[in-house]
Length: 418
Image 1 (cartoon, rainbow, N blue to C red):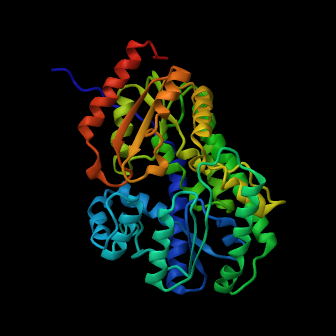
Image 2 (tube, one colour):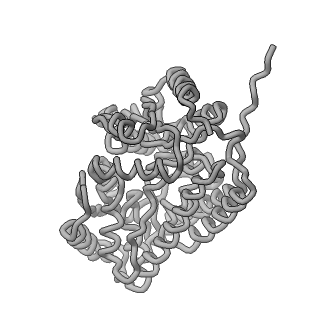
Image 3 (cartoon, helix red, strand yellow):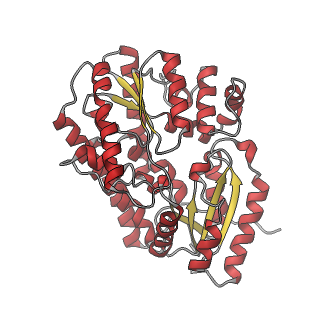
């Protein structure tokens, strides 16, 4: 009887440092929530975090919490709790899982971090609809539950080119939320702290960009699946020195791997690009599935969504408006196709995996012919996986496995192996 080959995925030592960063982040929030000594703002993942840091807020990101609900596979049981309140099963499963968890008074934070019993209580909620309009409903629901203010920024969508009109509109909206945030904070926006936060966010962004770019090496020292967890500090730590410190450690280790010719998986033969959200409850399964086929998913639009090269401390409001409007997710299909085309060339990819996430149309780009147009332009084949970011009832593991195996066989037949 033949033995099944063991899948080797090399873990990064820096992952422990990033794990400690996340633990310290949640313990600080928990202490502030219990003591009331420091104000807490809830913010969307690409919201105006730097303004909040300029007023001394600690910042909690519900989307990150919901991703944890997905990765711990708690989400699927919690989503129906929100559905029962009238939130459709068709809308964002981040929203429904998070509200479901709140209604059930459960959180993965309590299981992961000893002593933490609940999510931190907000003093104010701040959203930017650049991710999707669902965050507006999500945050407004919590504002009523906690009886606290909510302020928001309404962004543009389907943007072909970011123009001065876009920048002026978004930067003015950012300026307009300062006064209500100052009222809650009980202090004025400190422009020096604000500019420093913008400068630190830019440095964090640059380091994260370099970490992701390291995956262009052959073999790649990084996988997309590692990146989805390593990106934590880029999301929750923007505007802090601590995030910069851990990414310097990560970049150093990635560069060492590149110099040593050490790949994240053994015998990398196929290099793939992932478009769309990860399936949080299947990160490990998908990582092993691809690695077992000598395929490495090395780059993605998702992990690159926290690169903000336009940030400029000398012009904080307008540069934030540009950085948070240049996001892939709010751009036109023509822009997105050119963006992915450039990434395929830079990372020397052999194929694309599109994740058609049932409840996340804004982060799903394969429903209107983009996959076919890109294949015609680049000659690079693609596979669409049907599933969801959090709701595991919306995917079939067997179908995914069969389709991925067939796709890799197709690459083999086409002579795409490295």
